Length: 168
Image: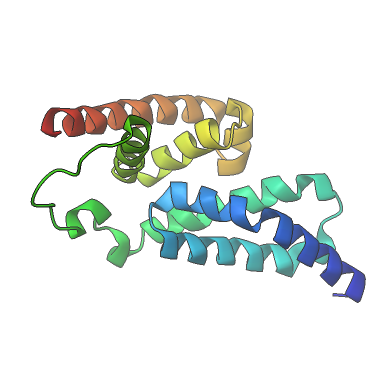
């Protein structure tokens, strides 16, 4: 890669690093894994940087790489455990000072319990703001698949949040 390409990539990386990391966190629910996923996506992008003709498509390529890395990682045998099961239950429920913060925590916790592909669809649709066609393109599947995964993912998320609501 020439010096100009390196400079362009460095600028792109600096501009997108935090948002890609946040998206990765929404996909996996763990900041350390999010860092790894973001790094994997940026390394893949760096390898192909000089081949990308349409710089406007760079975000879509990076998003697709990130989502696929997340789904692939979730399929690994050592990643099949649920993160919530690893954490000990608190002795007493935390005091909810701010309902919005508690709702966000419950939502993020619930999102971790949704299967990886459904989670990816929900994150891309509602966090990244992509339409059905954009999610289908990012995941390499049909629009009908996106719609059914969205419906199933929302149903699973509602079920998880109802469990949290009845316990809390």
